[in-house]
Structure formats: structure tokens, C-alpha cells
Image (cartoon, rainbow, N blue to C red; front, top):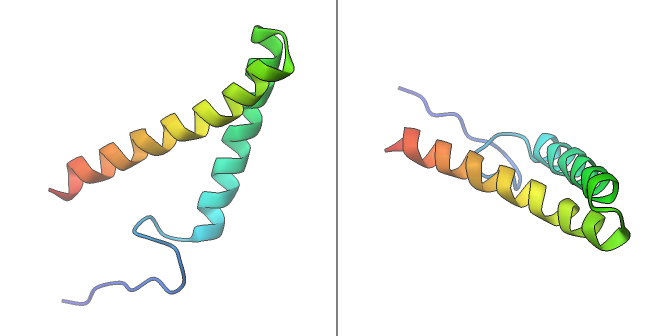
Length: 68
């Protein structure tokens, strides 16, 4: 049985550049939603922090659950 080895700083999810793009896109969506629905820069910044963080926690939880 062979095990895949990922080179670089990719972690256990695969390619690091794909994860970085996904985090940037979700930060942009969070910023836009916070700006639009919250009505200001502070809400946009909070959305840009909260959305990628929550998505990362969800992905980590799912991967941890299935790795047991």
C-alpha cells in the first residue's frame, strides 16, 4: 500500500495554493456581505475575518470526523 506524500507546506488537505485561493475568495465574499448587510467598513472587516475562519473550522471538523 502506498501513501501519497504532498510536497511543500500543503498540510493534509492537498495543494496550498488552492487553499489560499479559497480563503481569499471566502474573505472577499465575507467582506462584501458584511459591507452590504452591515452597512460599513467595520462590518466588512468582521465578515472578512469571520467567514473564512468558520469555513476553515467546518472543513477541519469534517476532515477530523472522517479521519477517525
